[in-house]
Amino acid sequence: MISPRIEELLGKLLLAGTFGLLAVRQSVGIIAAFRATAHPPYWQLGVIQSLLGLFFVALVVVMTLRRLPPRSSATGWVPRADAIGGTFLLMLLVYLAQGATPLAAQLLAIVLMIAGTIGSIYCLRYLGRSFAVLAAARALVTRGPYGLVRHPLYLAEGLTTVGIIIGHWSVAALGLGLMQIALQFRRMQHEERVLRDAFPEYRGYAARVPMIVPGLVPAAR
Image 1: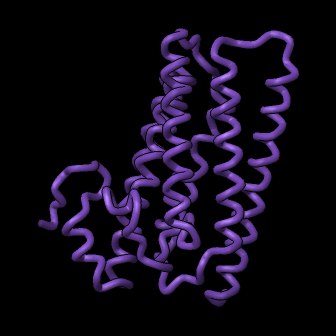
Image 2: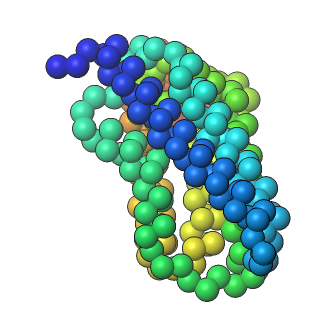
């Protein structure tokens, strides 16, 4: 059986390597966009979104390598499968045929992805060294966006997901996106259990702060 310390080290290296490759791919796409002779509508906004995405991925690599050791983590294969699926499932869109997206829908998609990526960067700034893909308790973060909802990073990523679905404009993309959103909700539930067990003060925090919708009174109250 692999020790928790070795598993943590392997997880760091695997995630940092995976997101590092994503950063390289993002960089290649940005360079290709500038070199293209014919540009699609709103391509400048697309480049902005790609640059923001590149910054977010680079930040994920840094936070993964610098993250704190976990006090406890979710056990079993189900939380691991949900974490991997929720993080990487939408990558399967590259294998699906893209529909003819109307210009208005293209603009909406890019705006949602930009907003979601900016929100993700903002949340990651506060989450810092507590960031992880697998549900784990490292440090309890309740400041900034985490004072508005308990899972703001998932909320921001949800905006990006909706933008990606609209931009792809196909029934298959919608189905894949809904599956990804469902997996993200399951990840929130896994994290809730781990954090409640690791931090006694989490119950009071959960009683004050809604789970995902800002302003919604928590059920715990």
